[in-house]
Amino acid sequence: MAKTADNKPATETLVGENRKARFQYEILDRFEAGLVLRGTEVKVLRLGQVSLDEAYARIDGMELWLIGATIPEYSHGNLQNHEPKRRRKCLLHARELRKLKASQQVKGLTIVPLRIYFSASGFAKLTLGVGKGRKLHDKRQHLKDKEAKREIREAR
Image 1 (cartoon, rainbow, N blue to C red):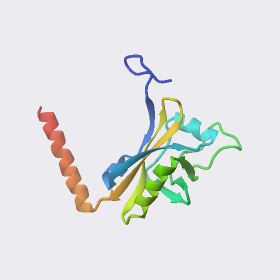
Image 2 (tube, helix red, strand yellow):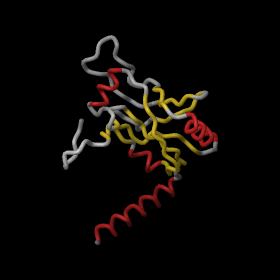
Image 3 (tube, one colour):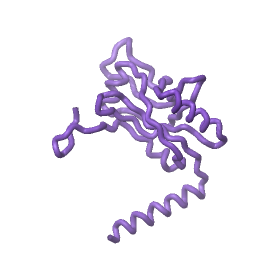
Image 4 (cartoon, rainbow, N blue to C red):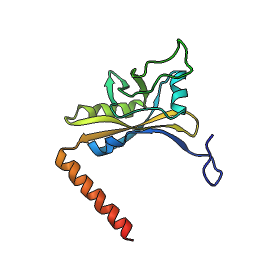
């Protein structure tokens, strides 16, 4: 298990992050979900190889699926190796799933994966965000605000 600088166990180990999502979407709500993975997928995640850039989540019936996330094949895998872009089931409580389903039905809202990490107990977790897409002028304004905050922080 990873340790922090003061020799305490780390609470979580970040594997991958979707940095574009925070720029392209205004995140309104966040959810934490478990992931159903195969053995070779876990090994590749432990190596830190994952891409969430083109990924999104969709609800089919009463199940949440992660679609478009790329976890490359394990280099030492055999015939049991996984498909790199396969759909992966996300695990949520029923009330969270109902809340997500209601927000997905609102026009203009999308469920985007924000980051994948291993929890302190060793399970792969996914942070999902319900986001509203930003228009081009919103993105420009976001960059201006971010730049202004950075300048204020550096001036101190």
